Length: 114
Image 1 (cartoon, rainbow, N blue to C red):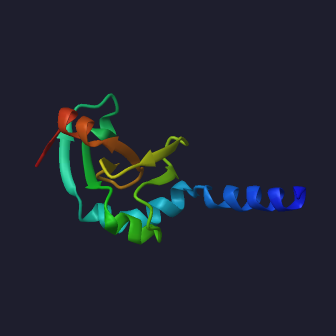
Image 2 (tube, rainbow, N blue to C red):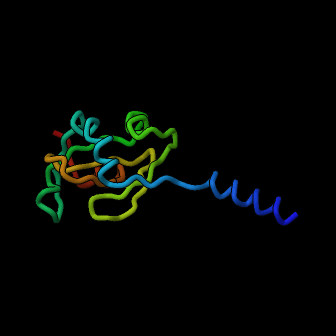
Image 3 (cartoon, rainbow, N blue to C red):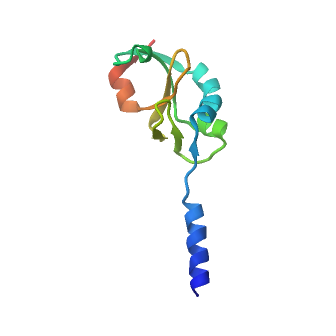
């Protein structure tokens, strides 16, 4: 009986596991989408982030990463594990040298499109 319970515990743990994409892999897969993204100008404490490119977290991003999940987890350029959900944007400086997640509300509040 304990063996059966342990087996089901193992299977359920695998089913609920999330995949966290490393920064370099996520960037490699997202850069083609970011190159087509909208450009924004705004205020940021970091000069490089005053001019950004942003794309919504959509089916194209999920397809590029090979996942069907509505949200993804990846390591951003600061080394933080972040979650990008359906209402979030993937952003990068125009040099496409870094990637981050920004909520739709923050994008609308701090940046304006060009």
